Image (cartoon, rainbow, N blue to C red; front, side, top):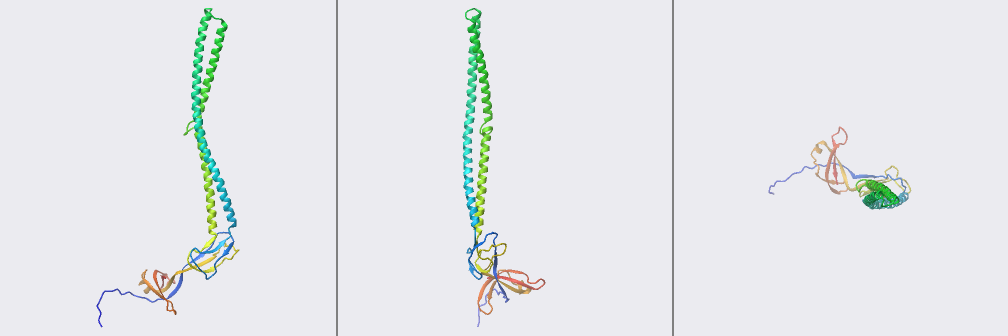
Length: 306
């Protein structure tokens, strides 16, 4: 018999033995100091990722959550009230600043009017004094005009004092960027920011309690088999491992190889596994060649994922 020659690749094979180990062992514990309400699985049960394994009693946490949520509502009302006060303070500042400016203008007009009246009455007094010298009017008329001038002088002083008071108030009120009114607005804004910070803190407390309550429902993180259950209804988790799950949808074959064989096995090499005595075969891939099984020995572990 003959055959056409062709180029091909001849791959080396090795037959080595070993054991099967789970893809991973998952140890589950809980930091909550709450008693178990229910436990839904037993040793040997197959579970899926996300399946509820146990539920802890959270009655006290639920009460704390309700109280925290009520505090959020109260704090939000306080913050809304402080926001309204900021708006009110801005309107008040605008009113006070405008009123102060108007008072200065009014006081200045009053000063001008009082000075004009004083000037007019002073001219009349001088005329009356001249008439008195010529004997045309009585002394009583001159005295009355003198009293009027004295009153006008007092009125000018009063108007000038009112003007100074109005100008001081205007200066103190300032504007929207400086002065008393700006300080009042800044104070109201600070109170509002503090109130909102309290709201944020209260909301964070609610989120923290919700997260804690969520942890009271213990779920499986992987598909696998329960190999250890260490929790019963009414018990507290404490610091111990309450469930151990072995993930078996993938497994490792840990094969023992001599150093000569090990050097020839590349990562990613295909592997056919034969279960002794059953004739069942499985396909896998080399994922790692690990260090010495025993220090100083020539045996290494070839790790295969199946």
